[in-house]
Length: 364
Image 1 (tube, helix red, strand yellow):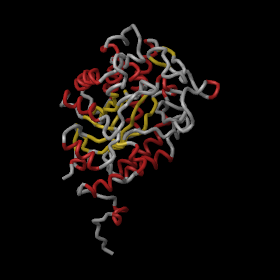
Image 2 (cartoon, helix red, strand yellow):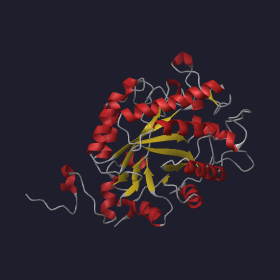
Image 3 (tube, helix red, strand yellow):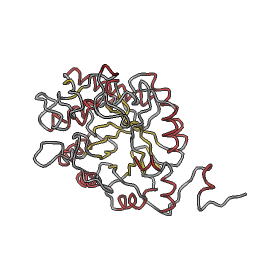
Image 4 (cartoon, helix red, strand yellow):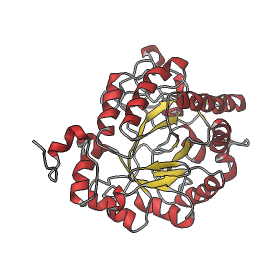
């Protein structure tokens, strides 16, 4: 049996296969509210039998949105439509997850097809925040440095967002600590130059994330899983003090002690124009390095994993436990059906689509 299509159990949750639809911004919300675009976008992938679907980054506060068109979970009223979406996803036998995030200094920006940089407040933007008053790039505004009380308020925003996510029916909560957004901004010396207990040393820079994890786990029911998405490296040039794979490994050890359920290993986001060796499975060495160093931690790999054979090889070689896919599932929402055929895997097609299965024998 193909490993990609084999079940995997984390605590009391069994996934029917190892494929995860990775979070991808849709820039289609109004005031944080989900709508029928999100229902169809996520639901159309659910009907194909993917094991897990995780929403785009969902902001825990209005100023935590990447753009004004992002999903939010900062109002009780946000729950209703999200509940409709998770209900449909679960009806397909798929596990729904939500990615909770805060954009920090990269907030108040344009949807990617409209431009880049900070939208001025006079044009509908807002004042951004960060661990230090350092802008992401020349076309981004300098954020307001967060006070200790501000930090504690945002920790509480994550806790409230987690409670609303549970009410909305999500079985997985993923904390977005990657891609140069607020939690990652605290982790990286490129964006965190504080001199208090949230800056400087490795232990201080990871404090914000660990406080969020502690706060969320305190209200988390036993049947809800907690994931973390991490940038394994900033891809900074040699000699520049930045977030590295070595620090990611040390953080992963602490996350294992916190008993998070999965570490989703991505990379980059702290530098506007990094030199990244982009290619097939280019981020896999980061995931594998963490998996080898922290073998008891469940690891997800992501980054230009586009073919069935490629995904299967990663799992066969025990380089990761789950395959996260993003853009390929935008190009081909029904990728998993073709992958099952190529890997000769036993796979239950949706009844409504079975006539398209090359192995299906009609009774008519």
